[in-house]
Image: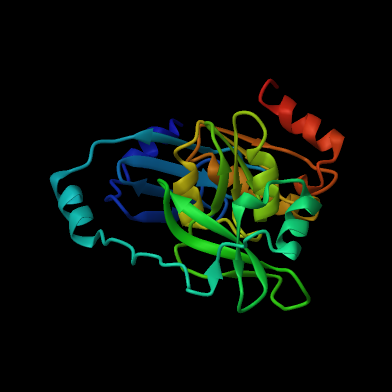
Length: 252
């Protein structure tokens, strides 16, 4: 069976999805197909089934009209007034030094005593994430509701990690963009953001390997080349073996 023609025959309008029995492995309701603005994506979520792919399709006039009618500009994000430049505050500098990156990446939350990473999209601030510098919980705090990841670096290879520190460590490596999903949940916003990259490397913490494998499978409908990096430690620890794996995975 040619899955592409099977999915095209579903005639899914832009912005909508269908969930049904997989036409290959026959598993119940494990197969999804989505029309994401002209990108037709499909995937079976059963671990033992390798079905997944994507193809561009033409948008109908009705699709284009529908997209224009429902598209809304997100609310502009403004940093709270209590998030300020850290001015070389000792504990912020020590936090950056602890993980081996430049404190210029950080701001400071004077209210909650947090080091703050600002999230940008096209060089525009869209959100911020604060890391507690003391015992205040939660350890990580999100200030906005953009749903977008924190990113650091420049290149066409995204390395998906859990936290901002790991993203900065990765982003300082040549040709990688560290993409922190701020936890272990991969949302539709994350998938849509990652679709701009030619390659995505799933590199969640070692204790999240089952989710890493599952998310890699889901991403194959959005990113042409998806790889899994099996880690011994979180990337923020810069373990030599893990860093060697990261730098070598593109050539494998």
